[in-house]
Length: 345
Ligand SMILES: [Zn+2]
Image 1 (tube, protein in one colour):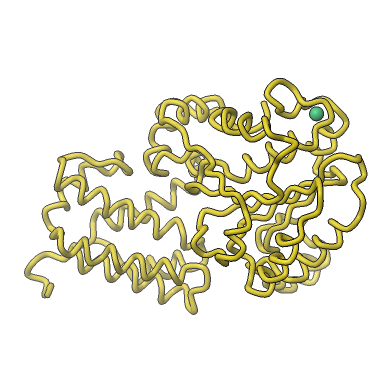
Image 2 (spheres, protein in one colour):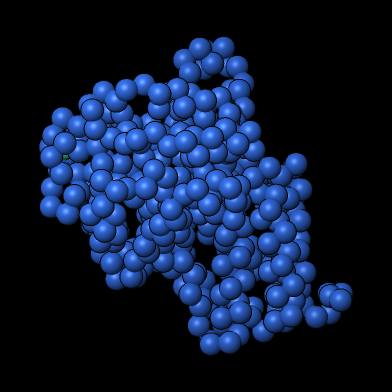
């Protein structure tokens, strides 16, 4: 199958106008429902030389073969260097050299290379497809350079920009693309897909709850090491009196900050839900602890903390100091759930 099960209908609708395809499409939608997979499925279907029913890629022609191997000559993906998974650098390993810090931005040089690619004639005399993700990673120079390409489209060239933060794109870039929202899916479809990927039904339900129903996030989060980190953080959040926040911040400072923020956020959502409905949504394995703690945190304190989390989220890509960022996060949380006699204001 080309694309994920919940993408099929939307893919067919787009492919029904293959010959009138807009030259630039902005694919938006919530994180974790497979926007990049959608873009790749659309790209492969556009490049396929014997499209199957509904215009979807056949999976068998030479073009599909090259696409599957990642070397179709008329296809390019542009992403920031820090998202490119590369082979371990043998020399760096041998000399124990520190790896160079990779760019988190899509740069103007990358856009120029892409423009050069567009000026070449296509190898297979069909479409040429470019996927940029995440599009909001373009720095201003890159976005300005891309704008020129969007203003003077090349025939039979489809540009797919993928973002879950369309608001961070330059409005002029956004306005030159047709916006397509990549569909989400029902919890039952997400669970069925996760089971197909090899998870047990029970694990599938748990990770889906943690990921707010997003199947691709859920699949990534089924990883054992990931779950160990989650339990470590949740255990501290659930038993604040026993937690050593500074030590925890130290232990976590080298890890990805985004999931930690997500766990703190979803845990606080569970506390609010527990207060309002007597149940939790995200971390059912910590439901008892949530019930114990929920009364301790006032709705007002949780509300204030929520806006603090929004502030912290803004700095998550480039915190000046990960350790300080974590200490701020965890100590702020500890105040929200501090017992009344512990000097809460
Ligand atoms: Zn094909």
